[in-house]
Picture: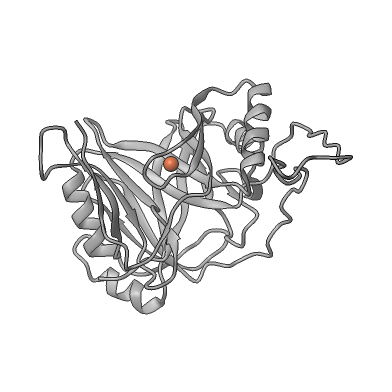
Length: 293
Ligand SMILES: [Fe+2]
């Protein structure tokens, strides 16, 4: 069908925008737009926004957006069963989109032509990592515990009822490629876990922009923001501790993708991750299968 190029942003609902914004500022995002009914937060990269919150009584995850490569691709996608017509996005950042609801009920937007912004400076409070062979001689560092900006939205992870259905749907509709998979224990063909990367040909891209894990209830597992280096990840961890947010998991290193991770909960129980590093793959990489006992 088409090949999307990246994950663009995630949408949430919350009954109190101040409460959501407070967490996101502490997590390292920057306000791009705020009105009575919605909040748009950006990273330091050129994307207009990475995180959208709508004022709604019931908090929750609404869906996510992917970047398309052209209006032609949006036209093509709009012809798919269940897709809505191409429409102008009547929101900050503009652009066009096609909306579609996937087999597990998640709202998926595919967008093109959204406004881009001048990048923001990355906080350089943290010096290089001095290890053996690089002694810190007369190079005194006193790191403040403050939020440091995140760069971009790296991936979305969804709990899904049927990994095989979702895997087939996203590969055939959006051009995703399998990076790593794992089967349900005792099965040779039923997926329990599938890491999907975008197909940008020979260009090297994140090992996953999307990950499905088999679960009894569909829902958001987490969204993940990339940070500039491992030192920043540790410093931000301590800053979030001082604010007494609920910690989830980490700091650690994943096996597939091998990125460094740190998971927290926002003020409405959505899991959000800071990550650094990770495998970069292109169209030539095979699917890697992990066998679980
Ligand atoms: Fe993650």
